[in-house]
Image (cartoon, rainbow, N blue to C red; front, side, top):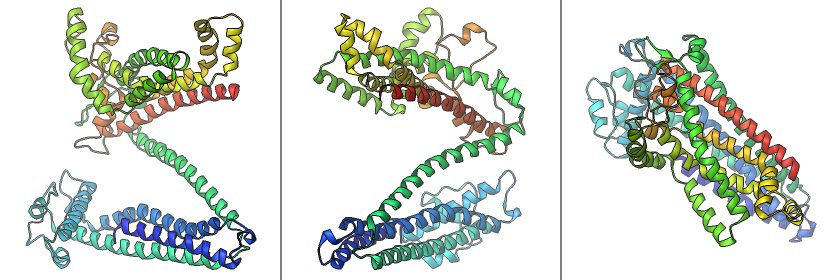
Length: 493
């Protein structure tokens, strides 16, 4: 039974339990709602939650744990002689997964029976060709060990899914029946439901916190492995970025850090003035109709995917800057440059600055404006000397949040500025030339983790060190922004 059917049955049990709980509560009070401790809906919600919460919790844990457990069991079935030279156990396990999925697809499409898939032998069947006809690409010929591991993996997965279905549905039924049997007019259903909802809210907050901690610790462990193979001083203070999987790598952070900061600075120089002036106009000058139209257009701008911005930079902005500015001024010959990526990224960031600043300016008390106007100041003087200074902490927070977004951008940089790291030894003029091609930390994280990579090599592990560095930078900016915004809110709320 598929996961969708399991969820459908759980929801059906909960729905039936909801109406049954309400009916039982009303029956116990003779149909008099005033004799019930709680509203009838609370009794129904109690039965529904008793069915939903335990079953869905076990289902979520099972779906997380089962793949890890099966992986650890199946990997032991692969002997060392089944791992070819130049391959790894992880790559062999990838083939095991693909073979298992291919066999499942062949059975579901009617190309193989269940018995044929379980009795298939690599010695008599070209498994790679047969699965290739189904669109399952395998890196090498399927050996008997891989096929046997895949067949065992399918059996374990099927058995685990069967047990999961029975246990989860049994929990849903038992939970609903137990809660239904306790339902009567004196039962404090409201108190129980509110405690369960509170526990769910706390659980949601804990999931967010634990997810953040999991991300940080995963990067920390891999970064520790990287620094055990590569000197930390060479990484943090190195001026050359030249990864080489043959073992002669220079993995200096400074070229990538400079490219990241340079492109982000250009983007903010575009986004901050335009976004701030747009926010002042919308909040202080625009009429209701104009404000509605302009806000809608800005929100549309915020909804454009970054890959579309990247294509705009590649085919429009880059060639235009090259033909009309870089080449006539002798500053560059390529359309891929810091200016290209910065301008397009700045356009992307305008809604961030504008929307946040607009909300913050509107939050300034009207009494401050009235007081300034009453003392004889003009409208523009009131904005310059009262409204903007009062909203300045919040505006700074919006700018810092936009800066965090700029630092983490990837697609616009790849298509607009290229993938070449800054040449730190090429002189100050080249480093500050906005028409030179540079790249950022995020781009190199992607490039180091794509293609044929060895996760034990420092050239791959450096991606985690770069990610941790980027995380620390953006975390610091977000903390500063939150502190500033909190100080603003304490002043005016």
